[in-house]
Length: 159
Length: 223
Image (cartoon, rainbow over all chains, first blue to last red; front, side):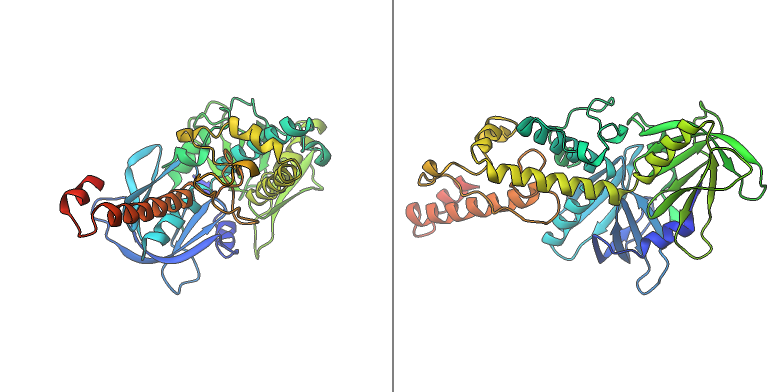
């Protein structure tokens, strides 16, 4: 599948939500833990060899599950191949919790659910649709009933 | 650079509803002819397929940091997706009519994660303002979605403040997303940690009261 690699590399240089050196292990049997600079930018997780400018790779964080493996380790698995996990080793429990939290919130779909929730709540409390003033009330991506489930507790879904 | 391509392709075809779909003409990379492709926009990803019923996309354009402009072209209803980097590719596209072109240009201009984040932050801020201006509405919220574990997370009304209810975690201003279910609280893991600490403190108090000499039986009851 083709993708716009140059632009993705450019994206990896943008300010990140979170970045740190973590131990990272790939999903294949026989992959070992390697020290990587891991950087979260929008809904992508980039990973670099420390001190290299170009990332080795990127993970799109949609349709994925983040799990705590142990006190300092978390994993990311994608829903189409749940047995293949990318494993990340942190320095502390707190750092691990923070990464898990950030990654769950990094998906576009998660943000969309929040938006729909806020929109619905504001409308319920004020009788007004807050998106009207921006002229975007009819945008497909902001619709509640676009075949989407109603918002419940989205940030717990992936735990 | 590697990408988790299989999973990205899966995102394209999985049953989460797309933001926009339709046929567009896309100018080829090497040969300059326009090819008709089936496009699927999901979030900040624009996928394109050979046919409408193809099982896998031929490719994807990550739309972060792009601008969408109308452009001059031999094709009618043409527009371009441009990026701001050296030797960036310009994706030249053409729609089938004026309405389709306008609709696609609008949808693509608003497709970025950053844009979505801006709108979410703005609504979050508006909701906070509304809640602060109308504290009685918070009571409504308590009876609303926050029945998790039967505990009211939201700020208790002043009259009950003297009761020995667990103090509510402080509001986080301007930080990352608040819980969509319980506005005014932090993320679940912070809440969890916070309650964990309170439980720990209570446990210590209890131990000191009932087992001042470190009775092992009492210890094991607590675990």
